[in-house]
Length: 232
Image 1 (cartoon, one colour):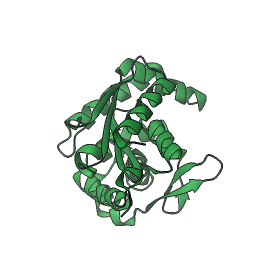
Image 2 (tube, one colour):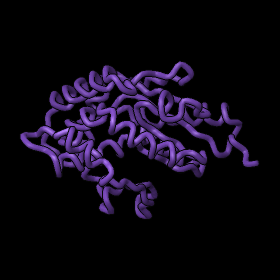
Image 3 (cartoon, helix red, strand yellow):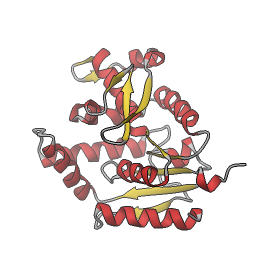
Image 4 (cartoon, rainbow, N blue to C red):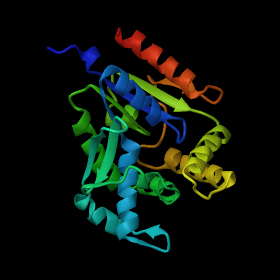
């Protein structure tokens, strides 16, 4: 029987722009696990909605739900970046799903019960054999409530807005800091108050507030906990 500690299910939940995906990716790379960015799956679904069922910047949720079976999401290794890129119906959309128009809509799409049910089923199937680090909003509470190790990452909205704004500027996106912060506040409210799988900290999740911590400090803390808890 395989050593479960070497093939764990690690859940990293938390707010937008706290670095969840980055830390999950770093952990997976260091220990040879698979990283699954579930937020990217909701973003890819949002992109499909925008491209096919959107009018006046509003996605028709009824049409989107009726075509969920047409949405095929895959993760493939990018040899240049040594990370998993997300593919929507055979097309690499890793870069496209990070655009602001996706950020504006993704929380609205993610709160649709049918969308969550469809993607949670895929997420469980991907991670059923362990050896994964999965990040999102409801991994430790819904997708894998019995995960071997759970983290919940948070930071002040002001700090998160600054981080996201810097990311957008690096991509030459013409957007103000105020717009970024307003978007984060809106997404937080939707994520926390949706009726299905709201964003909450699992009782057994380890809370990390990285408002005053840089990326390296945060990862070192997570890495240390992982090694201690799993005996690695």
